Image 1 (cartoon, rainbow, N blue to C red):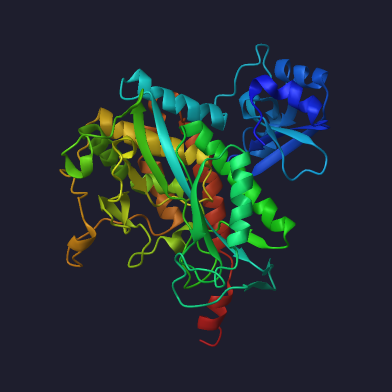
Image 2 (cartoon, rainbow, N blue to C red):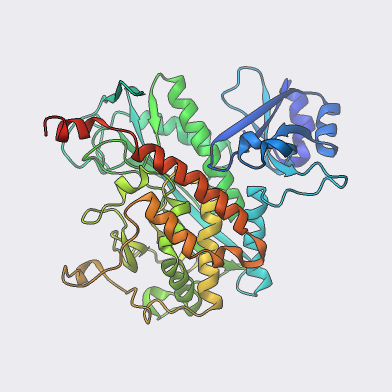
Length: 457
């Protein structure tokens, strides 16, 4: 249950709260937490002094200088639905251990908020709105192992029917009750849910789509949603994965984001009568996102598995262009939107292995770069391409085909991320180094399909 800031102490007393839980995501997006026995004195001390932790284990600092401080963000209070003892959970703010306890420059949540603030600085908009789509698989059994002498994965699913599971009804839709329960928990945690349904994959692929919120709350809610869904599955003896491509010849799972800008109550992206009712600002914004799309994939699709989903020729969004109702494009303009207040585009490449504080931030900075530099996507040759205009003879630009190609693009094209010091060269170098190590580890590891193809050659 979400707890308003001004009611924290009263609800803590009513619910007999026993623990305070502080949650932090590390650089790659994995969630960590620290629990302290609850008392009002402890809460006051955490607010004023915080508590120390090892920043090197989060990817924030070197081992030689790793002491850092975390303090609860009181606006994020939540009663944790999966702790046996009544527990009040908070996201955190990260600080240095200098004499002034200065905010840590690369606190990922601070970076996300600072990026959105640039819209006001450059008089483009006041805030952003984002609507994420959570796609994931639920499996009944999963086993895997990777060692020098034994490497395999094995899955079992309670589902299996016709190739296309999109909106399939029960009894074939085995996990509709799971999605009902998950939706209730997500809503109690502060997420506004649009709908849920079975996705295309016929071995247990699901989707839950959230309604719109600003950048930092959306990133927080992506982390909360993953936490709730993983824990609910574990509670029920199920296995849930957000891997972009967990199963060969099954639909991949993305984290598409619908996105637009607001000034007060006015949608900055709306202009009646223009293409798809999109304003010139919206078109420039799309131009920036598409220009930087190859570099963005290093942050929005940051795993080797991500690129097993991003394969041309299927519904995966690999073409660097835009168009209405075109699901092969990186940028799709929903044709069904009739509400001027929700005129928007959908950026389709991202997946849920991304750290949302970095990926949403980067998408916004790419769009901002497009607006400030007036990058017209039509003049740049990015479209529009409608689904009915598809012609295999048209030469298309595509997203990178592998993680190392994406990292090479980020290395060449990252100045748009450095605007106003939101990212730094040091942080980008750290990201590239970390992800190159992952790529090399996977690339150097023999896998079962190589045995099948080459063992007797």
